Image (tube, rainbow over all chains, first blue to last red; front, top):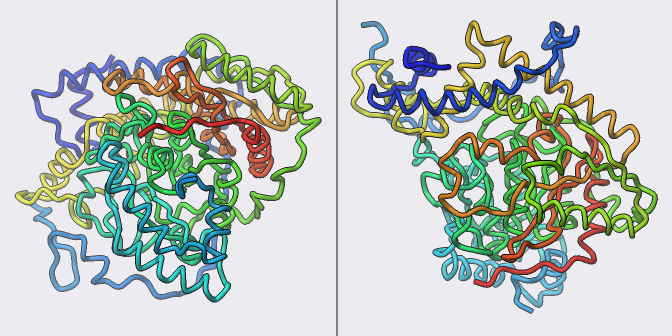
Length: 94
Length: 482
């Protein structure tokens, strides 16, 4: 069962502000979803469970060649705040 | 016969013989969109000027005798594929004013053939949903019954094709988002083998599951589209070098094939009319000389949980890029970096997207990783093993595409758990990376289309198309009355 504290923690990890008033509703919705995920609990794990994720799957990697990238101005056109060819962000250090 | 009732092969003949120009055909579709789409709400953006310009270029190419399969053919594109210079929203407020600086590989391939892009179709926000009712822009209606959903997340594309507002369309499928709306709207939609069509320029949701595919009036048309958009792409690290000729088995006899019927797909939860219609289709296949064999997929009962954990975990990572800094919605009055990101994401994302991000973060977080994410990966391997075992003996598998026909708008789309459970028939195909096609196999008592899915082993896409095409040849579809 999820609670408000866990939802607050997950929201912080997810970088989504969740208003105090909407937390109880979110707890109820997320609890119902997690209950559905818990149908996996009756799964009998076989010996190979520990090996899951160990295998390395190599993709079709392309040859590493230098080529022109996108124009900087074009990439900046969708940013609300930009200056001298850079993105502008609010202060990170408080 | 109306122009919009002609298939793309017939349109190709008309265009190449100069009985019809691409400009005339494009204007015809733009007029239909203007007249009819207010009822359906299938398009978020209509690119009228760009389409006419593209049609003029197509006519020039046709005049030179250099036409390809899709030259001059009007197509719509789900609004999660980037087109340089055309707003791409992904159905979200987050991307309300996003103009991509580049185009997806599939778009380049279409434009190389001078296909005519009519516009961008509505979808569930970030492709998370099965109803197209979570779109921030257009909540699309089903052309067969405007009080019902078209399915989703590619509901705009499915509705546009069904309502003849584009000849063909491209959708994307992470857990059934091409096949389920195709079933609900009475058209054909295919999720090809993972890696067979480039995902470069497709806005990412669950990268190990996402796949672009065609939505059209027949399996044959799907094959034609796939032969244009498929193939290796160095810009997609998961793109396969294995070449597929999607049209290679069209028209070849299916006699002697073994079709698997997995018993778990026909049990409790599947609507009686849907079950009977798919079983009747199996009977028709038997009459064509196919052997039907009952098989079992015991891990199906864990598929929904595994799918939602894997896709949400991937989504929580993929959607971290929406920070209000580089592109997309930005909450302007933030004093700190943290405030900028957290408020931007609160205001820019809808409720379902937020729920999935939270679920994915939960599954990946310390203390829950083994119990959820790792277990989901384990189930993924089990499902792959079960499919491999089935395809050792059988050529393809036949299942319903969805447990029900299209449901009424407002019926279940506000209940996440009910919506997730409705994906039971489609998610295993994405989990295992297989090709699956949905085609109409019947109609219920209210004349709503019923879809069946044909699933094959990886890279057996041509065989899946061949089996669907064999059924479609003798099946008469009902067009929506609009």
